[in-house]
Length: 107
Image (cartoon, rainbow, N blue to C red; front, side):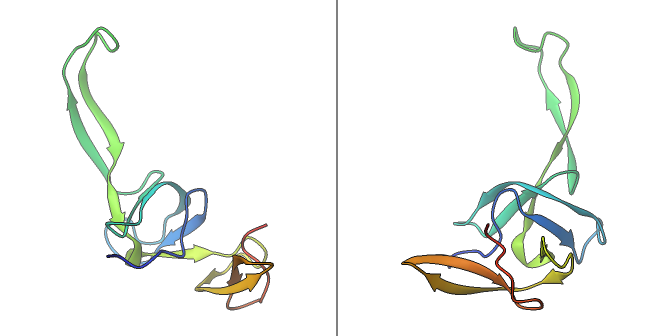
């Protein structure tokens, strides 16, 4: 069983390693069971699309591939720095907190 991730869909992240190192973008999808993310404009792959009724042209599409969660760092919305996220319980719910500025990441 995989541990839960501190990065979620919609978060802004920075790629810290790999061919797209330095890029900052939003998380489109997360797969916590595999510890992987789909980040907008990162790890672009070519997908060969057969012509269908929906897409009669077909062709070669560029789509985002998954990237491991350890290869990205969360960007705090309040201090705009890359940070790790701590967790705090608030009224029975878990809230993510920036380790650098101490403000809540979840609003």
